[in-house]
Amino acid sequence: MAGKRPVQLSAVVSSDNAADSATSVAQDPAVAQFVQHLRAERNASEHTVAGYLSDIAQFCRQLWGEETAPPFPWKTPDRFSARRFLASFQKAGMAPTTASRKMSSLRSFFRFLVREGMVKDNPFAGLQQPRLRRRLPQVLTRDEVLRLLAAPAQVQVNEKKRSRPASAFAAYAVQRDTAILELFYSTGMRIAELCGLTTARLDLLSGTALVRGKGKKERFCPIGRPAAQALQAALDARDHWLAERNFRRPSAVFVSSKGGPLTPRSVERSFKKYLAVAGLNPAITPHVLRHSFATHLLDAGADLRSVQELLGHASLSTTQIYTHVSVERLKEEYDKAHPRA
Image (tube, rainbow, N blue to C red; front, side, top):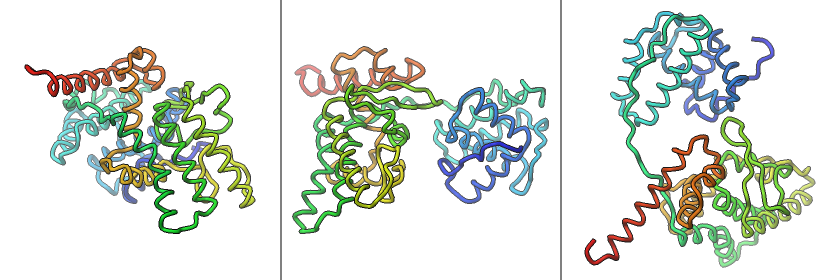
């Protein structure tokens, strides 16, 4: 369709074949209309759109084979096709959460086709979702968080002990990464929200940031004093380094060595390095700081509704998982301390 924005698939596609398949399925007229529906009516991000395309493409490959090209005969899939799609996840040992998401993607797609009169029935309607195991999110203790926050400065100290002169960018990177870790823990931002933060949406005088979250919904995040101080130091170091390189000042708060916006992948790579310095589990992701932010607030007596607003959760039930974390930790302390536990 002329005039449509290209779909960005790099965020979710892990192989060239999968990317080609998702790109191909996007050329299907029915799928193209669904993508427009996601963008215009549901305000979906490109990452979400790419996820839907990947799931629809997987269904097409299973049903009609790798070589089948659009347009696809969407009236032909039946409940048997849908059940076989679900069974393939179980045979492959796929995590229930992943299987559930893919089923939801196809259910939403066929619901749209029914609404638009392209098909009569939704083959995924009424199918039972894979049973999800309720897993509590991993949370760092306050001491572990403090060790992690101090890790960038410790890296700088270690470099000086090796008599390695720090470049202007290396000096900025320490300030930048310290601010990133502080901001994660101070606000509970998601990694994409943090990387997408611009100076226009940051107000250090009032200690707030306007964050664009899932579904392009916006919320204000209060920024604590240590995080605000770290951010100011990082911005000053950024501007000094950019001036030395004659780079134009970007809109992004955090920049890479090329002067462009920092990517989530770059943040994750640095995060692994700081986990090692702090002596923490290398499997931990930046999202654990979001979990820690919410749990520590609730531990200190924060209102559940307030934490929901701070996290940008659409449903209170999503936030309630952190109350279970707090209860489990209390039970652990009880078992350790009580003589008749």
